[in-house]
Length: 447
Image 1 (cartoon, rainbow, N blue to C red):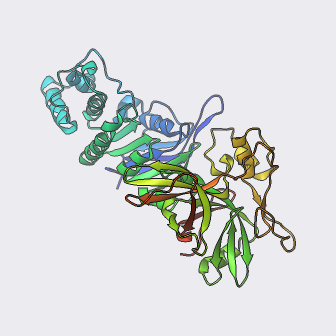
Image 2 (cartoon, helix red, strand yellow):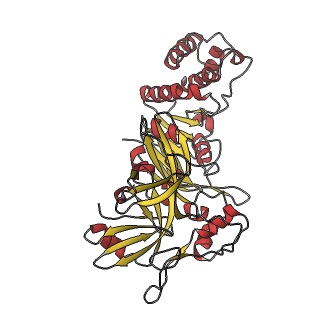
């Protein structure tokens, strides 16, 4: 089957040296809905504009409907693009806005009238055709903008955060409407968003981007449940995944240990995962723990992590309880949720010991480095660890006593909700925990 949209090795470098898109390979099948998900500045809109022909790629190829279009101007690509700001002509009625692309192609009046009526019914604005944009709500304007985009029967549908300027109460309705329309039209769709809910509920597949590169592409369940990269685990999921630094310690014949700083997760030697962990002896890893992997247990439960409730978020059907377990939180440079920075800085950060920055939040970033002892038997246990591992930091009077590492747990209604400051015990299901090495690659343990 010919792909509706295909990108091969697409790279975009601006005149100042900024790399907006860095070697993206992506295919969107006919009728498929693919969401480009990522933080601001990750290259989502640049990819969309390259496909539309509004910008040219520095390297690589773009194909639409099975034909290369790198040399084709935007008006000849027959793609429909919908922007977040509606971009309607204020002096024209809704019907005139929808008909505008057909007038530019010199279609006859009967053809234009029939096409406008058809797409107006499709997007649900047939009763609003006589109104001007100022007389429409935000949701109605976006419907008109969509009708104008699809009236030409495009080969590809490009949407650039179309719901960001729409009231929250209308977004859920428009999400389902956009999905329905693209499904009925059988048009390959690229949808740019930084909203996880939009991506998870609308897309057949999600491409998670960071710094112009595709970190992972897969179905919503694959991206959420099986992240291949640390950034994907950190970025996808609400509430956000808890990321704790851990040092791996092996007691052959007894257990493998993930030392979190003040507490630890032990895996009995009979468990197949213990052998895999033992192979990482003395390594530092990042532990990703979603709320789905955490349950409340009695204080005396074996293997439980103990802590205090630091925050409670009430969501109606459930509450999210955040528990400070004294772990070492992952620094932004490791989680890769940092602000845009110069290329190569992350690699330098991983390779070299950073200087201690100023401020409590910055200092916590420096705390996020558990360093195992490299030679001989571990020394006697310290106040911070049972197995001779220790976080590298200089404590001063401005540093709070807890290290700040937390996990979140879902408490469904009508179960009683713990209060802030209350002591709790939680159990972590290792089968639902994600481990990552210092480069952010997934470490997989046996099931």
